[in-house]
Length: 94
Image (cartoon, rainbow, N blue to C red; front, side, top):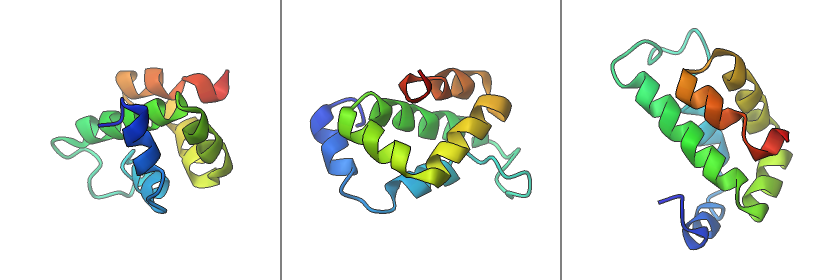
C-alpha cells in the first residue's frame, strides 16, 4: 500500500498515522508486545512504511516535523531488528 505516491498522499491525511507507526516499532522495553510472536514482523512492517513515506518528499517533510517518529527512528537504528535497522538508515538521515 505504501509504494504508490497516490497512496502515500492519502496516508498523510491521517493525523495519527506517524504516531501509530512509531508505536508499532515496539521500542519500549516495557511494551507487552515486545518478544511476542509477530513483534519483529510488526516492527519491520512499520519501519518499511516509514521508509516508503521518507522516499516521498511530502512524507519526508512531515516525518522531519514529527519529533516522536524521528526519535523512534533514531532509536530503531540502535535496537531494531536487522531489517528494521536497514530501513531506519534511509533518506531522512542522509
